[in-house]
Length: 123
Image (cartoon, rainbow, N blue to C red; front, side):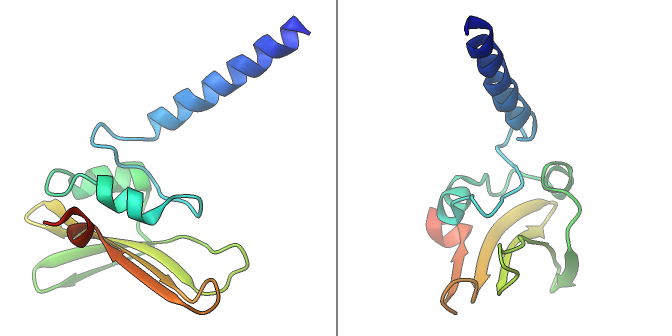
């Protein structure tokens, strides 16, 4: 029994360490369906994170675009039943992320929710 408890403790510790490795020194990590969008956006280090850091810790973007001198890196988060669209878009200007937006379009009950790090942080 003691071995089982020790093994479970080591597994939980290993899981915590592996999650920490997936987070940059600036707190960047790949959001999932379980991520609280408001919390993620409120805590995101605007004007410090580079696009390279986003790609390293979030992964390759699903789509990119350049509009009016800003680069947009968009990541799709797959909804459980494949309905609607959930995406995070990192807006890059001057070599740093200046905003992150969240869009949940019709995933649950057909209601669209959008949030912005700039608005939530009051910047």
